[in-house]
Image (spheres, rainbow, N blue to C red):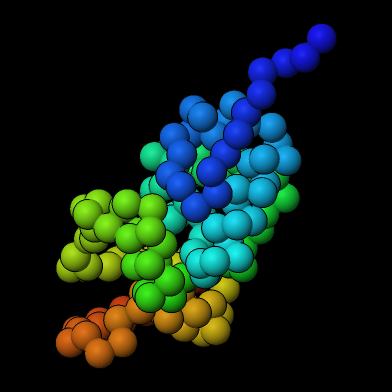
Length: 140
């Protein structure tokens, strides 16, 4: 008894419902082709499949794909990927950073604080940074 036969056109957009119907090996081949041609990550694939990044991340992990923490695709590959898959006209989901508030509680660790601040990618932006330190001592 044979089941349904599925085919996939590498390099062509696919809806998530169709992607999920593919065998695991075809899903992997489809994604391997994308990652071989473009230096993009889970966010770009999520955009292509029309699903939230969390759904895409879960699916890609189940298929054995991983990305380094903080992975960012290069702009040229991302633009080429979007153009090739017909996503070039997709509205950019950008937010304007206006105000950040961070509260650290516990033993002071300057490296951790510096690492968090570096993650905001404000290079070249005009900023005002205010630091307030309050030493907390137990009463008694």
